[in-house]
Image 1 (tube, rainbow, N blue to C red):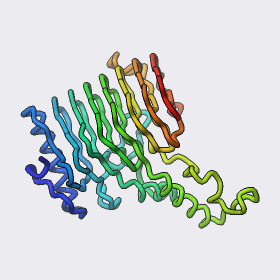
Image 2 (cartoon, rainbow, N blue to C red):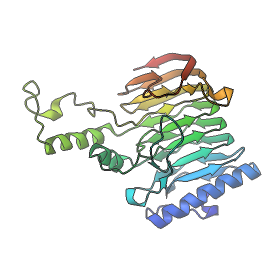
Image 3 (tube, one colour):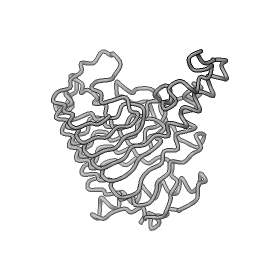
Image 4 (cartoon, rainbow, N blue to C red):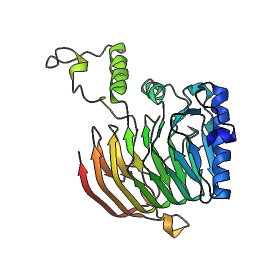
Length: 299
């Protein structure tokens, strides 16, 4: 269990978050080396700062309890600017950043809480010095499985991939607190002196009351690579549910040149903005996506 590597349950301060980040990194390394499972036990909550692991093979993280991202933005470390053409700005470190790993598995009956509310508010106010962190980023990896867990309220994307292949995601739930997003934005509009319309009775909150008014880039799953199966998922995020990102034709690795063989099936979506293909800004790189299939998606 996580406590065996120095993890501290139930404490939300920054020192506990640092200890828990170190425990997660050490426990995942142990899991890969010994073929064991790093367990977040049911009934326990661990607050953590971000974790990056690299070069692991066969790591297994089982979340039956709760992992919570540390909630104070000022304590969150920065990462270097990415070399990825779609995300090359300076950014805060991603919560779980998996680099050059093989056969990496995350499952369980619990979940991860991103505590994204303050991040969203800062984004609305344009007061962040760098891009918000993503919850999961898998980079240059192969053989990823995510099953059974719930992920919610990420500061930005929930599960993102870069040049990662042979991925299975099933029976997960992605949730965003739409009510909180809406309250923040309406409060901001009122602070700017924006008023409602006559049709809405001069109440801007009466306009589409079930929507947060605009997306905050809380994407669900963003694949980039080859051979993905995404099935039996539920998503409420008012943003892209699955956004398939293109490969780069100039990539030195042929596998990375074209995203393809992506299957999404049996998905239930509430207040999402759809299944997307591409969805990247123009740049100098050649893009390629092929063989993407969506089956049995309910909006």
